[in-house]
Length: 296
Image (cartoon, rainbow, N blue to C red; front, side):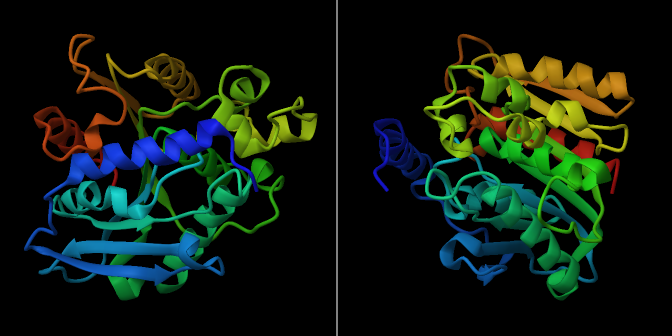
């Protein structure tokens, strides 16, 4: 498949920036990690890591991280230090790869997330994972994926649109970080090229069936998990935070919206919370984990 210049540039330039951000970081001494655990049939795309503190006993509330990268870029390795820092706060953390667009179109990534949840249901206890006290976090495209999958998991009628069976797990809370959530609007609009790469509609209009399957906002119910909605003043997707927050409150879903930094702090921009060296990231992640602990 010939990749568009946009996808090529993202995969090249974002990889350079991510490597520079994490240069010199190492696994904390307190962390026990299980690397490259297979959860599905798609090779490297279906691997996950699991992190916990070395003194863990019994099953613990567990965070499942869905990485960002515009649906076309990213892997668990560029989120490992962020995730291990979450583990230090008293969680088991599952950090996953999933199939990327444009090589794998929608709903491949959603199907992989569902496979991860089946792995957790069937094998999670062996890794101290409590399948009934799960938290999902995702940023940027990962935030869209988390909100979409959580809607499938909590709305049986919406789940019927997909060719898979959801597992018997319970997601108690979400971290929606610097994400965009109105899939239908993004599919119908003309500006988000990478989302259209993900959907496979670069040169055509979305069908009614596709719009129905990608319409998260139209299918969220009051059963949607309590959500911590985070962005920053310098985040280019900041405008997506308020509508999601208001929508959840209208449905009676517990939600908190926190906006960090200022317009004069570009370093506290899109997905700043992944940068373990930033004080504002440490503050954000601590506050988000405190929110999670109210529900697990």
